[in-house]
Image 1 (cartoon, rainbow, N blue to C red):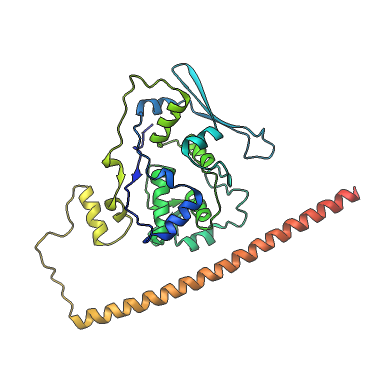
Image 2 (image 1 turned 30 degrees about the vertical axis):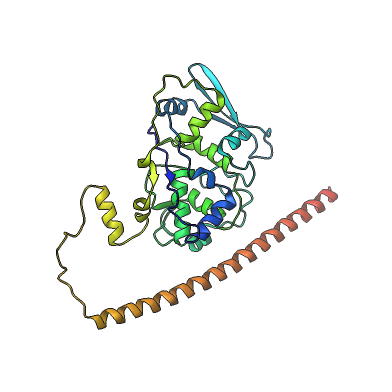
Length: 323
């Protein structure tokens, strides 16, 4: 199984005054400590763990035994980790809504609707349960970027949301606190195409007293840092394309010192700019109005759900007395 190198955010790359919503939503979940973790990791040990890693989840379902633990075998020894220990290792709260991952909506997110969530997050369905992220607000796009590279690392196209991503981002934007130690534990087990969280696994090994002597460690250095170059790939247009070409070794898509054969008079450009500004203003007002209407729809849906639940309880009581 491929091992994903750990990523961490460069200090000062995202000033809080320029990205207030990103930091507000992130801090509401308590995820700041995971952004800047720099730790060596042990690829061979991680690959060995992946073959024996198992989970016992007795807390998600009400009929469970209330216990949760991960376990794995290394060199003939069995190691066990409970959710409290994992929470302590991560430095995160062991509380909040339990989400197993995948497309199954958490029980406490009864008002979630994928179509409404997609509209509010400004993502468009492209096929099945996949969504394109190019139109997302910058701060929401940053959350998605950190989600797929740091919090729940994965391979694949990071410009596409899965149904799982949509549920998580919807909860974050709505300030519904998720139980991240639980979600990360499930992610460790659910990953079938790649294994990440190298820094976390190092801390787990050390916490459980796993013998690391003689093991080859890979140091996390600046090449693992999320920088401006990575964030530019989130955008569109010539600058982002140039970054992608440079990374692929293709060079710039436009030769230097070559003047474009297309020229527009200043009057046209001024008129064009004014028209685009007017369009952007009208579009922003329309989106704001749509957001307000969606809030109203969601509130009414939530009220109807509560009324149906109360009606069901009343009918249950009635039939119980009748019996």
